[in-house]
Every structure is written in structure tokens, then in C-alpha cells.
Length: 290
Ligand code: SF4
Image 1 (cartoon, rainbow, N blue to C red):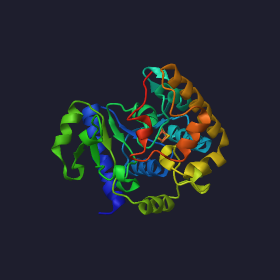
Image 2 (image 1 turned 135 degrees about the horizontal axis):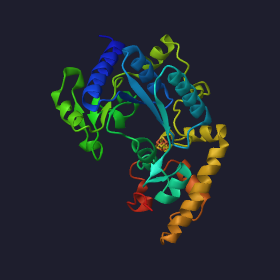
Image 3 (image 1 turned 90 degrees about the vertical axis):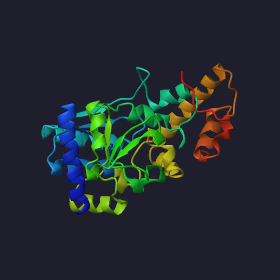
């Protein structure tokens, strides 16, 4: 069976579970990136009922927001319910720029608290469709077609969805969040080939030369952030200001260092000293929680 048919079968089976146990359609998390674009087209081809959400991070490139809004307008005309969700932390609306001083550390590869707040915080107890792929990164290499998220990566439960794993029924009966990854085994090449064959208009950031179209300045983008800040300089300013407020917030609780000002934080952060083993600068600190 080819990849497309396999993915469609997964979605159709997930839609049956969703309808039977949740009495609700599948919930597609659409980021505006290529993988969620493929999932959107597959949901259509599978002819399953679905709704779509987009989680705003407030650091999204303007082109991404525009692309999401355009896609959602088109979907709504087709009768598909769409929603754009703003980030909330501890019951209060936040942005990347207010979250950084609240957390009192910059977001890093190892401390992606912004994703936890903006993207994972909106998880609902539904069958949620995501464009996660094993080949994206080593962190995602252990992803399955269907997952029950745990408190951390190590405690998540993977189901052998393609082979009718009956254990998946229990969390569905409890109406827990079940993550469905229909293209988990697709390569980059499979994704681009599918989008090209389907003649889908992708996020314009790809044509601008960016391989990731998530947040501007995402620590996962490493050195590519220099190019992002050249393209969208206002975001550099926003990070610098947030880092300045973060240094002040640290001082208020008696943490006078390791940085003295926003510029020092920015330089440390851009030099990507976020790799494993280099966070000792915090002495094991994992972020505040005002
Ligand atoms: S900056 Fe990166 S880690 Fe943070 S919300 Fe955006 S994509 Fe997630």
C-alpha cells in the first residue's frame, strides 16, 4: 500500500474512533507549515469530518499568519469549523514577550516552554491530528501513528494503530487526548512530492528560503535565526526588550546574573549555547513560574 493510502486509512479509522467515543470530528492542528498542509489535504481526500485549529505563538512570521487566515477562510467556506487560539498561561492571556519575563529564562532547545504554553496547552480531550514525522528530528524518531501523551516523553503510550491495537480503546473511552500522526513515516521528499503533485500553495516563507516556518527566532532554528532576524528585524527588537524585562524580573528575586542586560542575554542566546550540557550556566535552573 502506498503512503497516501495508508495515511488515509489511518485517518478514516481515527475518525471512526473519534465519532464513536468522543461524538466529535477529528481535530486537525494546522500550523501553516508543510506537514500540516499535507494532513489537511489528506483529511479532505479521506472524506472524514474534521475541524481545524491554529495555535498562535505571537512570534509567528506575518506571512504564516496570513497563510493560515487565508486557508481558514477557504475551509470555512467549505463548511469546516476553524479556530485560531491565543496562548494562555495560568488562566491569563500571554505572548512570547510577556512569557519570557514570567519564566525568567529565555526559551531554549531544552526548555521549549513557549511550545508547551502556546501549542500543547490547547490540547483538548479529542482525537487530534498532527503532522508529526519521525524523520523531522531525533526527538521525534520514537513517534507512533497513535499516542496517548504522558507527563513527559518517556511516559507516553504508543499504539500499534495500523494493526488494530485494542489498547487504544481504553483512553478513547476515558475521552483522553489521543494524538494521531497519519504521516509519521513520511520523509521530507514524500511531503514535498505530495504537495507538488496536489498543486498545493504552501506557506510563502518556504519560497523565501526558510526550511522551518514556525516562530521567528525559535531556538530550534539554531544559526538560521540570523537570517530570520534579517528578514523580520522587529522580532529581534521584541526579543531584546523581553530579555531586558526578564533580567529585571530575575533581579527582583535576587538572581543577579548570569547576565547583566538584554544584550548579554541576546548574544548568549544567539550563539546557541542551548545544547545539551551547556545549560550549567543556570546551575540546573529550569525556568521560573511567576
Ligand atoms: S519558539 Fe519554537 S519552541 Fe517556542 S513556541 Fe515557537 S516553535 Fe515552539
